Image 1 (cartoon, protein in one colour):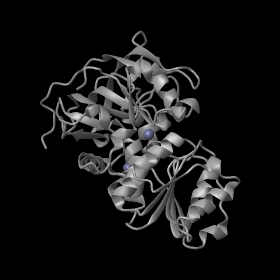
Image 2 (cartoon, protein in one colour):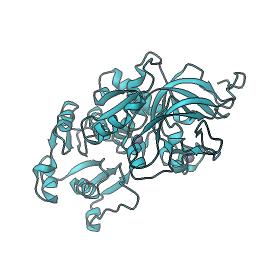
Image 3 (tube, helix red, strand yellow):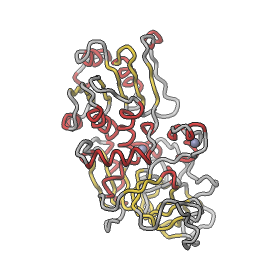
Image 4 (tube, protein in one colour):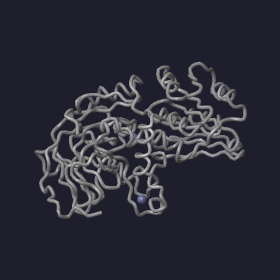
Length: 389
Ligand SMILES: [Zn+2]
Ligand SMILES: [Zn+2]
């Protein structure tokens, strides 16, 4: 594909509005910031909408980043400018932004970019690969603001992304609905379809029915999993799990003691589940997920809790060929997997749009975060540009 070196590049910084996180307990605040012009390897994207993921919330509330920072890693928008070294994108393209990877380390080369050697630097460092911050206060030359979150920081009117973490989509699609495909939905669905490669006729337990868990439930129906057991303390989410294909639902609050829930799961398949997925980041729940699996069963851990969190598992429990597998982004090669999920959605087999509640404007970010953490909504998507693409 032709490179974009003939297209004039913006050379001056851009005034944007962004939702700034100033500290762990400080509310988000919409402020005017300055965004650097795209370098040769970047795309400038006018953000239309951004989903909110628990990773945004954890990063802020647990102070897993430098402050102040612009978060947001489920952005969708329209390409506004293309760096001279990029190819495959044109101004006006509708895009989904997702996690970034280097493309050259052993995992990237072998087709496993979510386990990139540079995953941390590229997605969580707060700076772009050249070490510079992309955002600053307009009245300051020095007070740089952390950004480049998942090489997008999409809680803002504009974002800088890379070709590697930007997925072009058909302009006829409802762009704002596609935002969660960039992280939460792809993580849950990818765990089932890529990591576990779930087989028809099997039994799966999904612990936690937020966006990731419910995406796993939908993907399990696509894979033909026979028994899909959804587990959550929120009755509304269990009802949604049932609507999306869960064949049984369990509320841990109905069971006394740690083993009772596992015993209830075993009534579905006495020799244990083929697969269990923990989306909660809670070590006790992860242990239950592991124990719910039978011989040769695989437990997928998606949420690791805060750094330093440990889980105990009886060594003997691993012996019947069981394994515990950490999962990042559902092992997805996003450029292939996201278009596949869109196809499934268009065929009516993967109704992920049912998980979404939209909120208007960057100013609604705190309200949206609170609604998500209170369990009132499953996947909030903030409409950044009400005019749309
Ligand atoms: Zn890599
Ligand atoms: Zn996420």
